Each structure stands twice: as C-alpha cells, then as structure tokens.
View 1 (spheres, protein in one colour):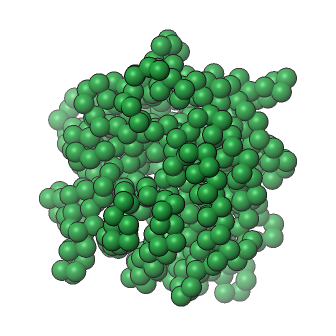
View 2 (cartoon, helix red, strand yellow):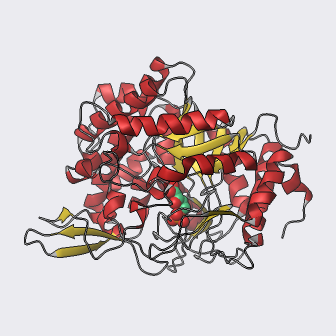
View 3 (cartoon, rainbow, N blue to C red):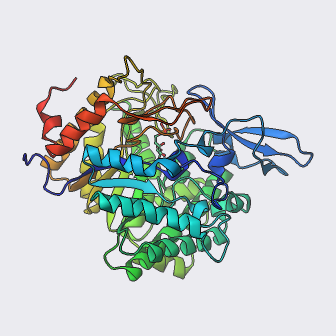
Length: 495
Ligand code: BGP
C-alpha cells in the first residue's frame, strides 16, 4: 500500500439533503425555501415562487430575494404550473441503501450528508421532533456503519423551514432558538452514531454578498445582524454538542471564496485583501478564534452597522469555537479596481483570469487555488482541515451504455495533486470529500444536467427519468485512487 497521503486520510464524497432526498412532503416533512424555488439554467436564474394578497403569482429572481428580501404582502406558494427540482431530488429517500452500497464499492471511508431540518421539525417551532424523520436517518447511519463509512453530518444546509423563513429567518432570535433545539435533538438522538458534524453549510455566503458592487448599504447591516445570529447559533451548538458527547468533533463549513489581485497595482492588492476578509475570513475568524476580527470595523462602518452584541452572545462565541475547519472549493477569481467585467464562479463572482480555463458553466478551474486555500487556512487557524466540496459540474453523455467523463477525472486528479502539494508543505489536511459524488440537483441553477457525480442518475431537467443509477468512468478511477490512498492520482500525468 502506498503512503502517498497520510495514513487515515479520509476519502469519500459530499451531498446535501435538499438536493438529493426528494420526498419533500412525505412522512411529515415540512417545506423549505428550496421547495418554492424553481429550476433555472446557466443564463436564467432560479425563481422563488410567491403570491400577493390578491392571489396573483410572483416569480422572484432567487438572488434578488436573497439580497433584498420579499416584496410587501407577498407570501411563498407552491404553484401548479412550476417545476421544482428539489421536490424529488434524486429520490435518495428511497434509494439510500443502493447508494450507500455504491459508495462502499468505491471505497469511501467518509460520507458527507446533511439532515433535512424540516424533516425533523417541519415548521421549526414544534416542541417534539418528527419521529419518522429521525427513523430515516437512523437507518442511513446504520447502513453507513455496516460499510465502515463514517458520516460527516451537516446540521443545516440551505433548508431553513419555510415557516421560519416567513417569520423573519435569521434576523429573528426565534430562529436561533429553533436551530439550537434542532441541533440538540440531533446530538442526543444520534449519539454514538455520528461524531463528526458541521454546523452550517457555507455560512459565510450571507456576508460575502455584501461585498458585491451595488449591494445596498442598509441591507448589508441586515446581513451582519443575521450573520451574528447564525454565528451565535453555531457556537451554542458546538458547546451543546461537546457536552452531550465529548467525542463529538464539530467544524465550520466555509465557501472558499478565493480571489487574486487582478494586477500588481497596490490598489488591487488592498481591494483584494478587503474582499477576502469580508467574503472568506470573516465567519471562520469568529468560529475559530472566538471573537470578531479587527477588520470587522471597516465592514460595519461602511454599512453604518452598530454592533450591539450582548455579553452572553460574546461569551457564546468565545466558548463555542470549532474543532476543525472545512470548506468548499470550486474556482478562483480576481479582484481589480481597473476591471468591471464580471466572471462567473460559485456564488460570488469577481473578475476572470486569463491564465485559467473555464468550466462549461463558466467557473475558472484552478487547482493551485486549492493549494492556496489549504496552506492559508491551515496556517491561519492551526486546526485540522477537510475539503468537503470540490468538483466539476459538467454535462455527461451516455455512449453505448458508458459515460467517459475524462474531463471530470482530469479535474479531480489535478485537485488531488494540489492537496498533496499542500500536505507536503505542512498543511494539516485530513480528508477529501468531492461534491455530488452522486449526481444531484444543482444549487445555483436547479439543473440536473450540471452533473458532478461519479455515479450517474437518470433524471432530466423536466422531471423525466427512472432515477436508475449508473457508474461513470470516474467511479472506477476514484475507486483506484482510494485503494492506493491517493497514489494513483499522483502517478498519472496531468491532462
Ligand atoms: C455549494 C453548495 C452545494 C453545491 C455546490 C455546487 O455552494 O454548498 O450545495 O450545490 O455549491 O454548486 P452548484 O450546485 O450550484 O453547481
């Protein structure tokens, strides 16, 4: 056996309930925001569906909603003539046994999944959890254990119960209380079955958007308040999780929004530094160090935000620091005061980069950016690091019953090589869990055609398909990578 990667390095894959489970209204599950979000494409945004007081339809651009909130008097509605891809996902709710067997066949030692919040507390406010929801996850965790796969469980991944969303979402302290009750329920219920947890997927997104050009100042203040509530909720969960089971390891989950200065103009360097602070470091600095960083003042002043945090909240942040750091990474961008041209990328764009090629969805592919993140965060936080999302969203074609996804293999190989380089340079990297190891609904576009998986799922963007699973070439390639503890990805030439 090769010793290319550290012994006990965890290999696996990552998913989220809202994008894979389906069964959106089965067995007592309540709706989430993702259940009133239509499909979209690369060029047409997903819509949030609502109705006004007269019952007239409103289709709101998802990003307008996230940036500006809902129009006065509008309420969420599931509309008959709209298609909601998350309602069925890839029907993991009924395929979990088969899917876990496939993960085991690839050799996974870790599997990242999330618990669907509204499957446990349909509205978020109930006193007692939904037993059927708990049973479902017990079955999944038991099955993973059978196959010696350790679950890494995200407590909250994009699926706030719609009721809480309608009642102010994260700007209300009620949501913090409901989250804490939900997290406590999971820690108690799954004690002994799950020991590795993430509190909140890509928690930094809410503040990252405040650094986008033209983001309204008043809304930035709202976002900082909401983010404070999320950070406090997370810190409370960390403390409770440790009390309930000292064996629990609880991490933050950050979208690695990496940007480089567009030129060597010192103005670009400063612009980029400020962008990285806001978009990338702000949340994890709080979650890892237990207090707000000094540069928060610059961000708050700009938004006229007066932080009035209670002593209790500040104590929670101090006492609820995470045990490890985890992140998603797909692409990098550049920041420049000289360039208004926008590039695409995961969630928050910057300017493009002439040295990099773009994916079919326009995301600049940059394996060295992953090395950059690993070395940066490993040194900044001095905590174990996990890559819990990474991968290439691409269209796959079935030819003679096979899927030759050499483009995906090339992407994964180059990123694994970058991880090894970071480890050789001293980064404390513990695991690699590429995103969407099985095809699932895209978060940004709602498409199925944007596939990340090593396992193909027969489902299209109109809701057709049998949900049958099929192994792609990358399935066999990744199995070999895991079997050799990474060595197979290092031996081969970079495509
Ligand atoms: C991250 C999310 C995931 C996932 C991934 C890929 O932001 O945590 O839920 O979907 O991005 O993005 P997309 O699905 O938009 O291609």
